[in-house]
Image (cartoon, rainbow, N blue to C red; front, side, top):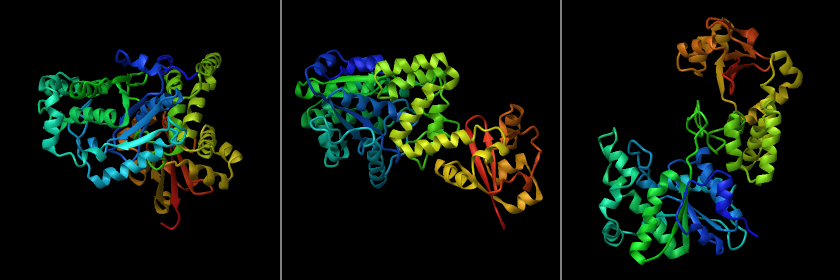
Length: 436
């Protein structure tokens, strides 16, 4: 027996809203459903993982997932949740982004498993020859302006603090996305669209277009928008977005993102982002409650996702590297890490490295000067001072007490590195270049 997809979403905390009749449709047999992805970057981010995992769970319940990469809608721009209109991309840039995102999706979805094999489609394929006049005649006449104005994504932009309103380009977005659903329903037997709760209005426009244009029936499920327990945005760190591309977010930083989640968040995330079943997750949660200091939830979360997104080798390197930087002294560090190990493990972990002039180190330089000019880890000297006052800055594992402390040759390791810890989870390496 295949698992019930709606029940799977419910216990994982992934069901926000569902159109009446959807569960009955899913109970009749294999259903083809899709989710659209924004192609404005050449990498998907952790924020996209909720929808990627929705498709993964959908496929594991015996249904057929389609990932729609919005080559056409990326040229328009979704106004949902946006206060300003975004820049539009060229066709060349969009095609590059589509190719990169496809490689990342292939790490989650099975594209060769029989009838419910995953597929990737690009809506540019059916929009590229669709003229404007044909679109407003064949699509626009079925949806009234009143209907479109009632959508939150439109109403919030028109009546909100930003009185500039929105362009016709963005206003038309829900029609374009609605036509995606119609085209897939008509040509690919797609009966269900999934997405985040902020997409409910756009998705329903699609079901309405199918009903009004052809008298057909289609369905919708949306997941909740994930936030951290403190209310901040999921998928963001001090340095910005957490990406799936190792060139944008190193495997070490990626692993650290999950390792540093709170216990409350980890309990939420393990249900969404793991493919473990309910019993396995509840058993893991019980063990975590018995010994929260071991951070079992965070470690398992980081292990499973890092291996899936990157590789087992990348995960092992991230763990080894993490252990190195929980050591409390430079002497202890070199007892467990030879120079070869340092270059091997740290190099693969992808720590940010700054090259420092040998001349600056030989003459001596203050901590705040070093970390704002030679290695711009901080944006200002004031920021350095504030972190020092809070006890959050360490040089070579030693807590810095004075912003005017002088860094010189004695602070260099045998392999000419200086190790900087900024807060609990940000590590930087200063590489002293001899002869400069």
